Figure (tube, rainbow, N blue to C red):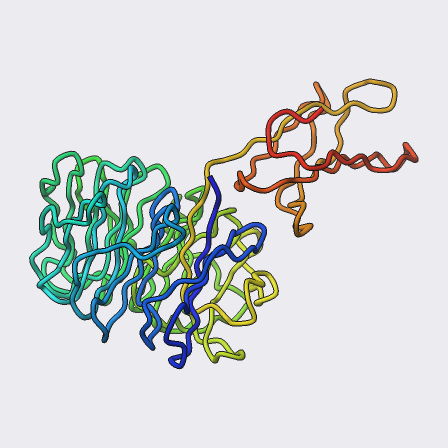
Length: 400
């Protein structure tokens, strides 16, 4: 299953097909779609497999669109929404989609994706900003700006789960990778709250929470760091989840987020970057902010050369892992520890590397692009006076 990223041109002059869908790893343009309206989307969301791309926007009916990869990224017939459609999320099996809006006519509505008919209205309220699904798909969290600000549902029957209100508007919610807790990004004090999902009660207050209005949050893939995107400088606050202490401020300067939706802060499919839409200089005036998780440094547009246009909004979907494995031996036939690297053949992009075991020579690389071909490099030891070896055009499995 491939990994995708969708980008939106931020200018108002483009009125059609202003959404580009790319293969994340090869940078190959797969299709261009668009609602045919002169506005950038509010939110773009892929379904888990990448089959559907849902786009919400305001000002122009029907206020949202769904595009189907299996139909050549053609537009899907869906019910007319309401102005200010906001976030959305799909269930793991893609059978259902929850769309949210700041207008109560939609609130948070559950749709059956087989025909996009309305199943039920989960939240009959305005100012619903977004929704997020637990890692195991068993619980749905909906959040917004109108009391009680937070709603939780059991996805087996869509019944409500009792949870206390955070007391203030919620602009983002994120499950920890193991699903044991939910972090809430709040507009006012206490700014952050943490929920224990075993009983849906609030944990101890996060005393280190900075007094900055939250605009979305996310955990790093290993769960060790939680990031809160805020409306005030420095805009990125990091917390050590072992004790919820605030981590040192980042050395790079980051711009303000251009969107308040929690769906807009995301981790890229390779788990290497955090991205959010921000006001940065460039040909289009606004664009994306990308932060490399390895060292928390900002990277420029050159790291994501999808098009000459900058990104306004991003949506990512990670494909199923593709494993490349094997055993390394030296020139005398003994198992050896050697550096092994994988490159996307089409672009030459380095996408994974490891060192084989000195005990049995084994190595394993986890990749996330099932449609690409890879070249595997086995680096010789400098003392061997040998050229590196390459295994070309592999698509996964065992490499001799």
